[in-house]
Length: 140
Image 1 (tube, helix red, strand yellow):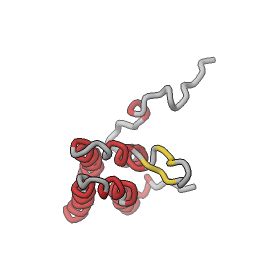
Image 2: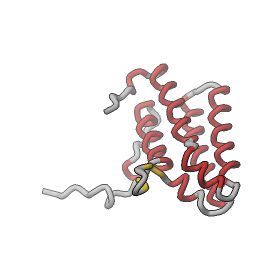
Image 3: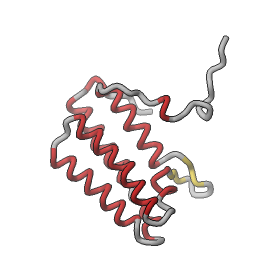
Image 4: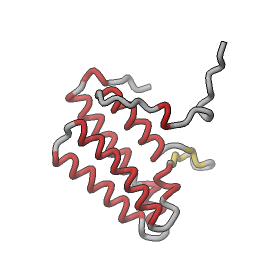
């Protein structure tokens, strides 16, 4: 009997589905959003943070990198066939988060409270629920 690797032993990218079908896209964008916005819990205040806030601590370069990671969700939404207005709104959220993140101290607090990737994920899920109902999952 072969022991299954623990989540820490399994590379994150190796566990993401690579298909182009809507169900695989749903699982992939949910996993990436969790990575960007809710990977760790801050002790004492019980608030989740992810790579977006952590990388955003590095001045300018970190915020640009976090914005690029956020734009990946917009790219996935485009591949799903979402409308131009929805994509423009999602892009505006990521751009606002990136620009606000470049302001010292204020930007770090904004990354903690304004979660553009979570808002974009909700928009993608709404599209998937409406246009691809077979991908709907039950929330616990």
